[in-house]
Length: 635
Image (cartoon, rainbow, N blue to C red; front, side, top):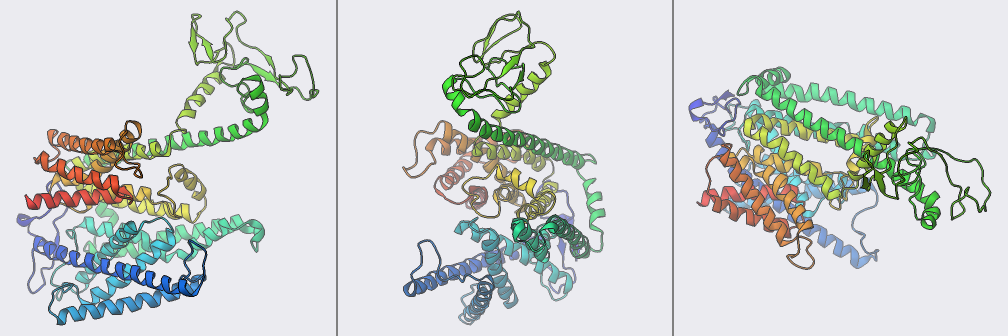
C-alpha cells in the first residue's frame, strides 16, 4: 500500500495527517475518494443487512415465547423460552446464530439469481462474517449489559461494533492480498488515524475477551461472601493475583498482538515512535503537547474535585444517619439541631467553636441543667471565645464590628479559629454533593464543551485520535469497575455510582461511553464540512444540557401529559445550538452556512430529543449529523 497523490487529497480541511493509502499493485487501482465512495455504498448494504438480522431475531423471539406460553404458565415478567442454565442458553444461541447465518446466505444467493441487486456489493465471505459477528455482538451486549440497552440502542451498538470489525477485516485482507483486492474497503479514509482507532477500540474489547476467564473469577470472588469460599483466608491474595494476571496479560496483548498488527499496517513503523513524532507535527511543535496538557489539567481537576466532594458527601451522610438515630428525640423536643458526634455543636448552636466535655454517666431523670428537656445528657461547654462578645441567637452570627450576620455561626476568637475555618469549608462542601443527579451529569456535558471545542477547532485530526484513546481508557476502567479488579475496582465503582440515573439500569455503566461517542462521532465520520465536526459537542454539551436545565427550571408546558419534556426545553435546545454554531462561524472556526437550514434541522433534532425514549447521548448527534448532511445534499 502506498500514499495517495497529494493533488487529489480527499482529507477534510485542516487535517494534519498522512494522505490515505491506496493499492498501487491492483489491476485497476482506485483513488482514495473513489474507494471511499464504493465503501460507503457497501456500508448502506451492511446497515440494511444488519437490520434484517435484528428483525429476524425479534420475530423468532416473539414466536418462540408465544409457543412456550401456550404450554407453560410462568410468572408475569419472566421469559419462559430462555433456559435457566448458562451453558444450555449459550449452546442454543450458537445453533440459532448458525441457522440464521445460513438462511441469510441463501437469501443473498437467491437475490443474485433474481438480479435484484440487493446486498450484491457484499461477498459471500462478508455476508457470513458480518452475520456471525453481528449476532455475537447482540449476545455479548445483552449478557454483559443486562437491562442496559433499549432496543434501538442495542441495534446501534451492535451495528457499530460490526462496522469496526469489518474495517479491521478488510484492512487486514488488503494488506495480505494487495494484488487481488480491488480497493481498501473501509468506511473512513485508510489513514493512520483509522489504524490506531481499530487498534485502540476493537483492541481493548479483544483484550477483555481474551482475558475473560480472569475477569470472571475476579468478579466471582469479589461478590461471593467469605463464608462461602473454599479458602476464605486467601480471598485478598487471590484477588491480587487475578488482578496482576489481568494487568500483565493486557500488557502482553497490547504490546504484542495489537502492537505487531499496528506496526504491520504502518509499513513496519513502530507505533509508539510514530505517535511521538506525530505529536510534534501539528501546526507548530507546541500545539499538540499544549492540547495534551490542557486536557490532562481539566480531567485531573474535575476528577480530583468530584472525588473530594463525594468523599465528604459520604462522610456527612454517615453523620446524618448516626445523628438522626441518637439525637432525634432531643432535637424534636428542644428545637435545636443535633450535635455532630465528631465535631460537637453544629452551626448556629450555643457553644459552637467551644470545647465540649461529654459527661460519662448522667441520671436518667434530672431537673437541673445537666439534662435537656427530653431527658438526654447535655454537653458542658468550656467556652474559649471572647467573653465580651455579644450573644448570638440561633442561626445568627456576630461580625467583627458587632453587626448581626444572619445564617452565620458565632465565630470565636482564640486557638479554635482554625477548626472553625475548617468547619466552614466543610459546610460549603455539603452543598455540592446535594446537587441532583441530573445536575452532576450536566457538569460533564459542560466539561465536554470546554475540552472538545478547542481541540476540534485547533487540530481535529489529533482530537480524532484522542477520542479513540479515551474510549479505550473508558473500556479498561469499566473492566476494573465491573469485574472488581484490585485495587481500584471499589473506588471506581463508588465514583461512577454517584452519577447514575434511571437510564443506567443495567449491570454495565454506559452513559459516559454514550457521551464520548456522541461527541466523537461527528469527528470520526470525517465529514466534508468543518461545522459538521462540532455537531456532537454542540448537541450534547450545549443543546441537551441547556434543554434539561431550562425545561426543569422554567418549563411550564409539556408536549403531552405523559411526557416530562417541555416546549421551553426544546426551544432552548434549538436556540442554544443555533447560536453556538453562529458563534463558531463568527470566530472563524467553521465555514459559511445557511442559518435557516441549520435551524430547521435543529428543530427536527429537538423533536427527537423530546419524544424519543432512547439515550439521547448516542442518538441525537447521529441524527442531527445525518440530517445536516442530507440537507446539504438536497440543497
